[in-house]
View 1: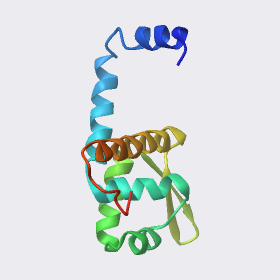
View 2 (view 1 turned 180 degrees about the vertical axis):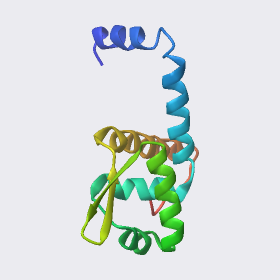
View 3 (view 1 turned 90 degrees about the horizontal axis):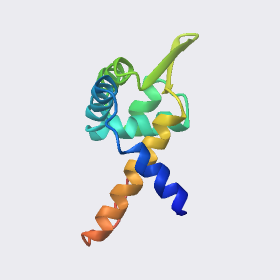
View 4 (view 1 turned 90 degrees about the vertical axis):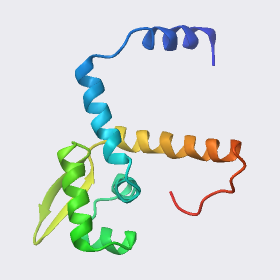
Length: 122
C-alpha cells in the first residue's frame, strides 16, 4: 500500500459514519450471522435461484429457505422477480458479494492464525 492510500484510508475512518448507516449495517450483519443465510446469500451472489434449487443445494427444507429468504429480502440484501410460476432470488448487487467475499476470506485468515485446518464449506 502506498503512503497516499494510507492517508485516504485514515481520512475515511477518522470520522464516525452516520448513525442511520450504522443501524442498517448492523441489521444486515445480523442477517449474515446465521450460517444458512450466509451460505444462501453466497449462492445468490453467483446466480439467480428459486426456492427449490436453494433448498436442494443447502440441504434444507423449502419452508426454511422461504423464511430465510423473507428475512434477507426485508433486510434489503436480496431481490426477487417472477419468471412464470417461479420466483427467482438473487443478491441485491455486487456490494453484497464483495462483503461476503471479504468476510469469508478474513475468516480463513483467522482460522489459519489459530491453527485450525481449512474448512470444507463457505
